[in-house]
Image 1 (tube, rainbow, N blue to C red):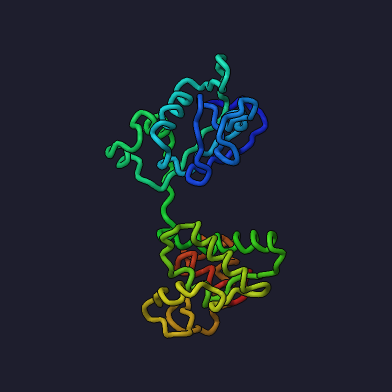
Image 2: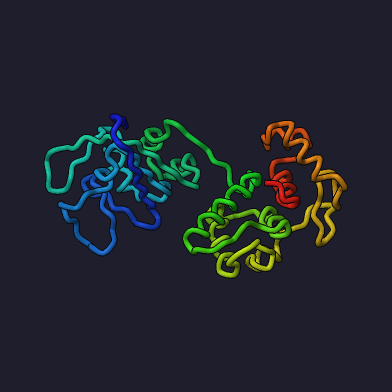
Amino acid sequence: MRLRGRPEGFTLVEILLTLAIFSGIMVLLLSAFTGADRDREGLFEAAQGGTLFLDEIGHMPMSCQVKLLRAVEHRQITPIGSTTPVEIDLRLIAATNKDLTREVELGNFREDLFYRLNVVNIKIPPLRDRRGDIPLFIDYFINHFNIIQEKKVTGVSPEALEVLLNHDYPGNIRELRNIMEYVFIFCSEGEVREKHLPEYLKTTAPRRAGDAPGTEPSIEGPGTVPGERERLLEALAGTRWNKTKTAEILGVDRTTLWRKMKKHGIT
């Protein structure tokens, strides 16, 4: 669907949480009412000139899929109580954690809608397959909850980070967010320590091979290597603080580099 250079907005439809109802392809949210007020602005109208994000589209009922397909195909909606179509001018993004190809085979998702939506497919690996992103999300959530809860948490200790990096996150990023929200109940300022983490993380997190209990592996192996901080600073300076290139030079991944910088107070 096309945009005409108007100021963009962003409209999120969480299908599982809001139980979105498509009626006459004017989307209404089922909240405190059971009927449809035709003077109420629908989500397609609210997203005009911007982006409509349909989250968890793999859970959308088949009856709703038919109406969504009609809107996508014709780029029009017909508001309830009206016979005059309204042109849609927005960007449509859909997300799911389901295998829609499999859902099509099982008859749970319309094949025609799948191919109509599957113009640009961006596959995001689960968090367990991109552990290098975990410290970035941790920093983001710390900043987020510091603002919301007016706290002064400064970071995560190496021991706590090790536990967080070793978890597989079956709940993906939502699980990490919930963990950090839990942490903020018990930590008001300073560093997040292992004692602040949920118990299930501490009992299931495996230690890496070669790591003795209570020790932090260094770039060259277990233990602390003299001059490690100086080598880190030298490598960072040589790459103008490009962490990806620095990690390549040192022969480690970005997560290990980030952890070492944190350990030595390098920011």
